[in-house]
Image 1 (cartoon, rainbow, N blue to C red):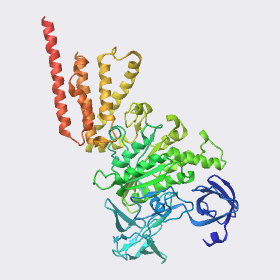
Image 2 (cartoon, helix red, strand yellow; image 1 turned 180 degrees about the vertical axis):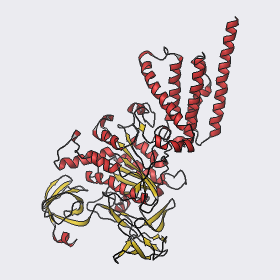
Image 3 (cartoon, helix red, strand yellow; image 1 turned 45 degrees about the horizontal axis):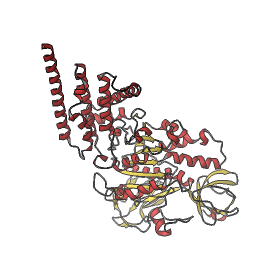
Image 4 (cartoon, rainbow, N blue to C red; image 1 turned 120 degrees about the vertical axis):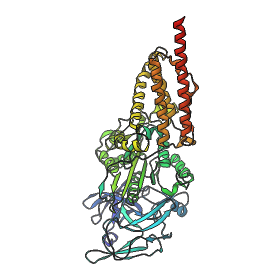
Length: 599
């Protein structure tokens, strides 16, 4: 550290967020630095002999040649400990609430604030005793961070040995030492309540575990047709106005993850403002407590510096890994990875690197892989189990799914929820296209759905997808020649597919049906498919479709989704009334046929 203070570098060029400095031979690769008289925050991304290339996380307007560059002695890191939940951070981990109190509505440059409030005290309850041997991941103490989540203080990676002292049920601040460990060489290390971790380095675990449990989203189209596993990765691609952000908001609100991290990465300011205003007022659906008690927001809008946008993804995933190590299931929403990729492209252009497809650097796939590979369900260093589920929105220009970010993303994800502009224009939300979307987790989750929802889950799912695929072919014919010329069996397919679309796949993000359990979703789908099977048999026996769809109970199916709770009696009652009405139609048709034969 003293070398950095003595050997300062000097700026020699400024090119937007990229600064080149000389006299940097004592600095390290990926080291955080302070640039210029205003102490702008930057990171060394390339070393070339005595010179270094620095990406600056703040606006560089006004920097002059010859100004000093000073090192900090650590890479880009975040503070990990109690005090993260319920707060809003910028792309490099600075708390926006603290910056607002310090600077007002207009933030200055070069601001340095503690990520975790250094004055807040936490009651630390020890869970081990002096004299015990601890290893990385061992539980030291707990803090009730919020009423919804217990914060578990673990031995950080890289520390092991005999516990010589631990705090005894006292209040502590972020910098307070809560334990001391003597390692095998007799050296004693102090462990503070809060520790630092470099964001570009993934936190270690013992091993990866198979994915067996779904992340319940409360959205029928996802839980019913395209489920995602806890620890899985999914992409939500779609053009402007197709509902990417709203879909991610729904997942952040209703998913059964124990903790949610929402990264607004390069999105428009008004969308992020909506998130910041809405989330603090939301209630957790399971406890009734404020949702922010298990949520962390990272805001880096499109008008903020591009370098900080690039870093925001790593800040979020590092915090997610920290809570995963405690044994929690974490859901991370990245909105959107396209804006993150655009930041990488802009920085690459400033570095004068050779561009690849559409100006993106050749290492774009590598960066995407590094991010998505940090998801997963793992056995933690302490022997527990935790998971990170990553759901990334992709914003392809013009809704073109063949552009580089979407295409490369598909290589690293196993769940693809393709948003369709035509569905969005028709006000069908969520606008997830049932033909282009897929989930490779369905087979791995089949046992869970069969045991927890219904043994016929896979059968019904396959039937619904087959019905929708057949309807797509029929709709092409209808667009050419009209529906009236089709035989009744094909018109029945179109009718039942319409019931699936309107009664099952479509779901309002507002009102009582905003969340619905997989059990109710399956019951609705099962009723629709039951009608399809019964009606198909009636058509084969000669009953006209016009008589089959005449009972009001047929279209009443689409209103079941509006019931606010899992009203199994209403669904069972409608099923009985529907069967009675159809049996009456069949009986009347048979009686009419017999009278015709006698005459």
